[in-house]
Length: 375
Ligand code: FES
Ligand SMILES: [Fe+2]
Image (cartoon, rainbow, N blue to C red; front, top):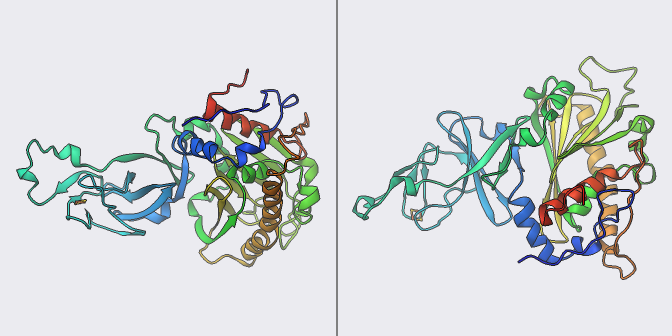
């Protein structure tokens, strides 16, 4: 059921107020977001290496929807709702490899491409149509070697929504196809998912809250650019976590800091230093809880000393700093002394500008109520 959405958001960031606190706490608004944001947009599922062989599969959740990703005999990666068309039992669990999908309840079987194979005595069912007993597919798109799923059959493709992004990231990581998952970490955060995204989309807090980060990147060259469905933050690197970019880099090192947020809940960070990227997947878990997944991709399964230095920094310094901020904001959003705020927008779109947060809030409102830029 839709709820009344009151806010003082305006398309012009200079005149606008932020999303009001109820948007970050209210269960009815969260339920609307489930349907209108998360069931209609591209959600991160994992790296293609999780299904490198035909028959390999893994499952994951988009709220209560259990999804199976499986590679077919034809090497196509497909996604299906993980449910049997007979009486609704779940078909597979966790991850693994199958030559045929067999339901644990009454043993109907399905090919890897979701087509019905056989079931005992189905030939005695009147008007039984094999085509009605296939698995229900979901949209899958592979982008930068990551698998994304969209539960909306009519959604635009990710490439159409984010033109040029894949080429830009590939140009900065020529060895992108060689990256492998080296390490992963999960955090439970007591904050609404938008509060976590808001924090990611500005660096106005960096000088105040991230003293080590502002030593790694050159804040004077920091730029934030909002495209329609993604936002980039870039700057020159000043140093890596264990050496100076200008003195001790190899040819393969990345010399800049690059970060990309992809609507609605994925971020890709490329730190100055050796080739690699960090995935930050923000998984909403109720109106005031979020699970943050960090995945570190490098050229080797075992991270190098610099890779470990980066992992340690993210895990012990940067992420705890941000979690403390967003959890404090989440408590503050319950205060009777706060309803909404203003955006600090710097026309040069430098590190202090919060226009990315404003842009993100516009996308949320567009999804929830069809708010258009010119309103
Ligand atoms: S529910 Fe799957 S075979 Fe019956
Ligand atoms: Fe931060």
